[in-house]
Length: 332
Image 1 (spheres, rainbow, N blue to C red):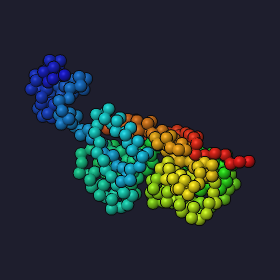
Image 2: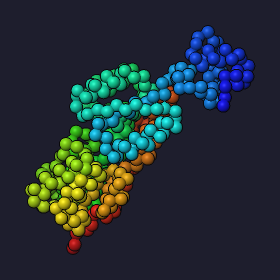
Image 3: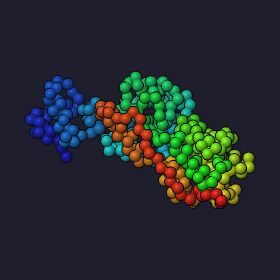
Image 4: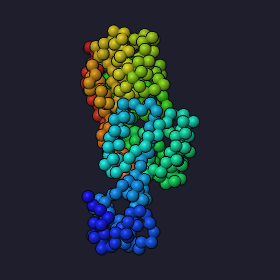
C-alpha cells in the first residue's frame, strides 16, 4: 500500500509537505502542490474518503432522483448506474420524489442540504425551479430515460418504438388493439402517440376509448386497466402495454377470467425487464438497452464532473423488438 513516505520519496519533498497537500492545508508552493496531486493520482494513494475529498475538492457523492414507485425497469437501470459510478469512485444518495409539486420541492430542499458532485435524474420533475437551481449552482446533471430542455439526456425513441410494437400486432392480423398506459410522464404520452400513429398508418380509426390510463405503471395497475376493458366487453384481440409491468398485470387479469394469452388475446409490453423472459407465456416486448443506458449515464456524468464537457447533449440509443410467446397471428 502506498504511504505518505512513498509519495515524499518519489517527489523529493518532505512527508510534512505531502501531508499538508493531502489535508488541504495552505502554504504549499502551487507547482509543488500540482506535482504532489499528480503523484497521488498516479500511485492511487488514498488514505481515506475524507482525505481524497479534501485533496480533489470533491465529495465523490452523486445524487440520484428516482420516483417513489421505483419500478423493475428503473431498479435494473439504477443497478447498472450504481456499479459504474462505484467503479469511478463515487457513492450514491437516493432522492425519492412523487410526480407532484409539494414532493418535488421537498426533494429539492433535501438535495440542497447535501454536498454533491453531480445528479442523475431518473424521474421527471415538472417544477422548473428544480432545474433552475441545478443550473444556478453549475452542478453536473444527466437525465436518463427522458428528455428535458438542454440538459444532457440518454433515452430511446419512445414514440417510434411504440409504433413498432403496435405494427407487430397489426402485421399479425390484429385490427382491434387496445392500450394500457400510466399517467404523468412524457414516455407514457410518447408511447400512446406511437400507438395511435401505428393505427392511423394502417388506416385504423384513432379511437381514444381504446386506451386506458391507469394511475401508475405497475403490474397492479395493469390488472386494473385490463379489468376495466373486460367490463366493457372483450372487443379486442390484442393489447399494447406501455411497460412490461403493465403487461404482466394485464395477462394476470386475462387469465383470471379464463382468457388465454396468446390463444385468445395477444399482449406486448415495453422495456424487456428480466422477468419478461421467465413468464408463462414469455413476454413479447420492446427491449430498452438497459446495460448500455446505465453505462453511458454514469460515464457521461463522470466526464462532466471531471471537467470534460465534450459529451453529446442528447444520446438516443437503439431499441429492439423481442418476439416471444405472448403474441400470435390471427387465423386467416
